[in-house]
Structure formats: structure tokens, C-alpha cells
Amino acid sequence: MPKQRRKANALIRKSCCNYDGGNCIALDDGEPCVCVQSISYSLCCTWFRDWGLPGSPALQAEITSPKGLKRCAECGTPFLAKSNRAKYCSNCASKVHRRQKTASDRKRRSNTNK
Image 1 (tube, rainbow, N blue to C red):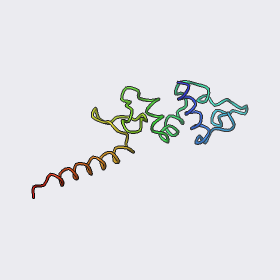
Image 2 (cartoon, helix red, strand yellow):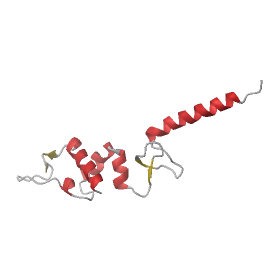
Image 3 (cartoon, one colour):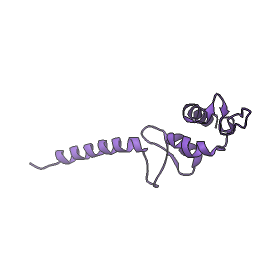
Image 4 (spheres, rainbow, N blue to C red):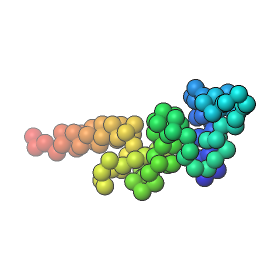
């Protein structure tokens, strides 16, 4: 949880258009109001949920859907599995597929009878 909160706070500071030095502009009613999402362990801010989290798919998967969460067998980052057979994140899947196909082609070419 603290690790997720640190990542979320970094994402809020970097990408939230309502964040202003620890305060939330959207909640400001004449007096500065602390950014609720930056001090909470739960998902409170709708802007952060709808616009901030999609900017970090790994963090989104960790926070929003731990049931379908898997760790990539290649790089170890958490990702949201689209099927029960998913083993790799989208970044690693293409690399692993290319590597496996190359190995398969190499094996098929070496087994030809002359």
C-alpha cells in the first residue's frame, strides 16, 4: 500500500491539472483545500480515477483490479490479464513471441532431411 501511494502521489504531482502545491483547485472554494487523493489510501478523486490512472497502466492494474492482476513472467511488472492464459504484459508479449517464433523457425530449418 505505501508503495502504491508513493507512485500515485508522484503521478498526481506530475499529471493532475487540479494539483497546485499540495492543494486541489477543483475543491477550492476561496480557501485552499488539500488534495484528498494525495492523503488517502483509497481511490476518492474521480478525476484521478478516470484521467490520471490510465496514464500508468501498471499502477491502475494494482489499484483497481487486483483479482485479474498477474505479474509478467519476463519483466515482473503487474498487468491486467485479458485471458486466463496471459503470461506476459503487452510490452513483453511481442518480444517473447518474436523470440519464440525465431527459435521455432530455426529448429524447423535444422530438421530438414537432405
